[in-house]
Amino acid sequence: MKHSFLILAWLVAFPLFSQNSDLPTDFLTKDFHKDRRDKLRAKLPQNSVAVFFANPVRNRANDVDFVYHQDPDFFYLTGYKEPDAVLFVFKEKQTANNGTQYNEILFVQPRNEAREQWTGRRLGEKGVKDLLGFEQAFNNTEFKRYDVNFSKFDKILFYDFLNDVRNDPRDSSDLFDLQAQFKAKVNYPNKNGVTLAVEPIKNNLDMAGLDAIMDELRGIKTPEELSMVRKAVQISCMGQLEVMKAMKPGMSEREIQGIHEFVFKKYQAEDLGYPSIVGAGHNGCILHYIDNYKPNISTKELILMDLGAEFHGYTADITRTIPVNGKFSPEQKLIYEIVLKAQEEAMKICKPGTTFRELTAATRVTVNKGLAELGIIKNPDEKNTYYPHGCCHHIGLDVHDKGTYDKLQENMIITIEPGIYIPEGAPCDKKWWGIAVRIEDDYLITKEGYDHLSIGAPRTVKDIEAAMKLPSALDNFILPELGKEKKN
Image (cartoon, rainbow, N blue to C red; front, top):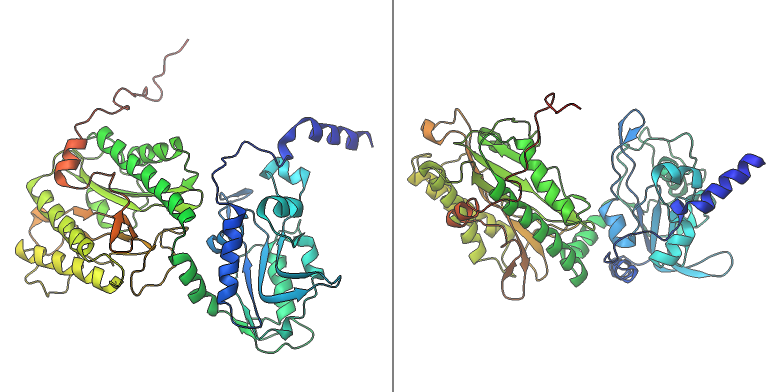
């Protein structure tokens, strides 16, 4: 009894678990998330329910987990950032046992002072109601008793399970259990052919229908989302500029990555939109190179830097390729100018009604023509692997965000990112070997064209070389060699 009193007194004295915290005030509002649920509901088929689960906690090793990141759909619809939760959005009003009507319900992890001391604050059902605006919110311990008759729905829409969720034996209502309980309620077929419910339910499970609905919703950005993406892009542009100013031969790929990410944090970006890609020389030929290990970058190399800050859940995606010594060699400049021209050819037709396929074709024609003129390929129609990827994708809550990939529409945000990658040993003159160039920018599709969001990061040869002559705040930031620190 005495110990319980001491614990209670400690909790009162230290407001670790208070809902009031020193957090930013510019997050998306609960009205934004409610509007997204309403828009989803309008697109659902009659007599249906959409079900979304929070992302699982991922284990890094032993008792250390990766930093938690919410499922983008779940965050988009709720604003909830914690694990072990499930959301139901109903097309029509439902009636609870007490006569209350509702059309959405959210089950979340409960408050737990002991666990919160270790893993951080939780909202609990009351916090979800107060801060996120849900009228029907319950602790996930109540989900097992939730007795809606799912057999009455013509469609139960959800994403199929990937069997990558760990079971926490200390928690009988974690995501593993929530999914198992849901499977039992809807008679989800076991992979071994064994059903999980006692009473058969008609075949109303739809594990494909949500894709098209969420693509339509998330592909068109709202004004609130646009402000988040703009901030993420501005921060990422500043990272590129500061690295251009700080770049010196002999620096490491890891050091360059660190400067970018320091700038992101300085501007209060919470996370990275994706693992940072910093490839010098031939490493730039690896499209998703994330080792970033090279310790000593040569003065003659290019360095390809593909990084994006994530601000309040929304990410940028910007790539710049710059000469380590501050000036492009003749060969590097020729390849760079081809890629830049390819991007600008796509920009000329970047407007509502243009297809993603047309954008890619515009860049590919330009790249192949340029490679042929330099003798790197024999003719523009020759199949080659020097430009192996498409040029465009949506960005938003994901770096490769959900959205339709047919025609551009107003308020989409996309990238245009042509590239040329000539690895060592390529069947061309050796003077081209190890040159890798990608230029990637972010664009808001407007009513008549586009808004070049990432214009703040220098992208022409002239502007890059000029930026690399500017003084850097890091010029005098020199750390002592390890093992040679001064001793008292």
